[in-house]
Length: 367
Image (cartoon, rainbow, N blue to C red; front, side, top):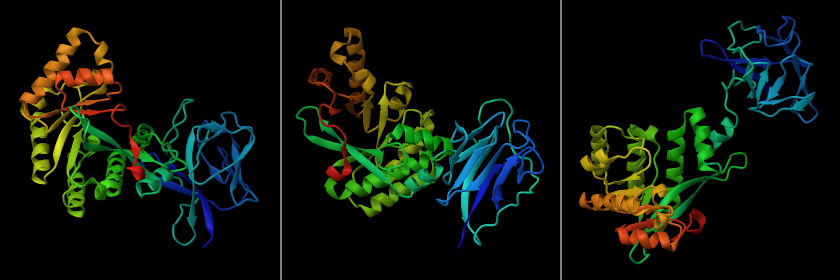
């Protein structure tokens, strides 16, 4: 089947409108004589045009427009070659370039008269997200990767557990999980990314655990979703004996009753949980008192340079450690990087330690 190009935009009613790029040069502008006429003041009468390049790609040429033509938010000077999924702004009118196989997708003709969403002002709109196609590939497994960081017993340094950390090796996506979750947020797919990382990590390491616990991260948006519990049950069924600990993000649960519900559901399927980043943001003392976790991970902000901290701060942290133990939870110090920090943590009674001192994250292929 032949490949055809189209420009996709979003109408004011929220529907996606695809305009077939059927002949060349394909002109875009405010004047009705253009192949794609956009009735917006931000466009010049003859704003830009698309033409075929010998490489098979499209070339975009700005026709000396007043407000400019932009590709992936960079202004075009003269002309440039385009790629599928590039985001194009003709002035403030936003489009995404796509391809389709003729006979498989019906394209809306360029004479479609639905009103196009074109904001006023000079700020470029963001109806489409750059790298969306690559992100969806990642969710399907392309470039998914992960790392594991050891959690050790503070007394003797012996291995207690691993924490799984999501990574990406997709050639067109950032490797940083933070950047990936920013992209996921723009697409409303944070839960899907969290699940993809968790699924990959468990499959990569489960056979080598031999009973060692594995801590997995969660995103607040998925904590109470049925799909989250289904995925946990599936992992436990696929890997009998999997010793799973779910880390609950500090912003996931704001009400004690909801935390009780979450703890009960996890208990029903044989999964323990940890309060993550304890001491950062929400104090979580109420939840800790009413619904004690199996593990409490103290935020690295409390642990960093603890050996240099004032006596007052040490007393506060030490009292929190004692409280955690009195409630039946296991205390874990995150972000321990020096032996001096570790000595103070041991003196305070921390039972577990995690950080660069005892083990940096290692790619799962090397665990």
